[in-house]
Length: 136
Image (cartoon, rainbow, N blue to C red):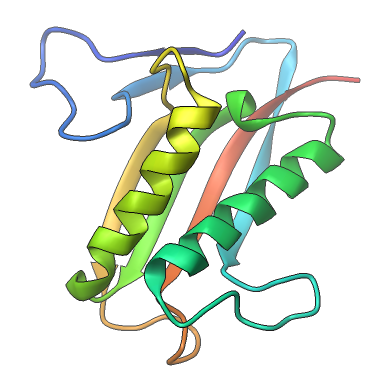
């Protein structure tokens, strides 16, 4: 089982994440490339950060499922938001997903960056991750 925690030696997290995550020896690390808010057909899920973030997280969920895993296997996430104006929508969608994914508040390590732009101008959010999957 992945162990996640935030030691008392540092300030508590300012959001839904833990400072540390440890991977058991019988798991392998899988790196998830940056996902953007596109549907299966390649079209954008919507023009706003909330709809794009929902789709990003749905895509990550599908990638994890292809490994026989789920959100509980996420060790680390990195969220990149193209401009501070997209933070509220991104955070709202992440809160929705994290409430479902982590009912016990056992969140993965997570970093968030506000960047000038992503790969194309219409993209508001990109999220990459690291998952720990049991060895087969």
